[in-house]
Length: 74
Image: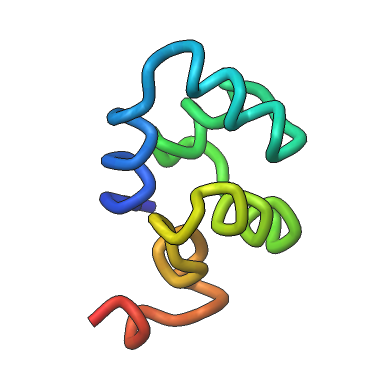
C-alpha cells in the first residue's frame, strides 16, 4: 500500500526526531520504516496515535485509506 503523505512526513524527520516520534507513538523507528515501505499496515489504534503525534501533519485517511477512505484524501 502506497502511503505518500506518511512517507513524506517520515522522510522529513531527522533520525533523532524519528526515534522520538516512534517512541511517542508506542512503536519503533524500524516498524515505521516497514509502514513507510508498505511492508506492514498500522493497526487502527497505531494509526490514530501516528496522526495525533504528527500535530496535524497526517490524516487518518492518509495512514489507513482502507479504513477511513480515499475520498477524505481529496
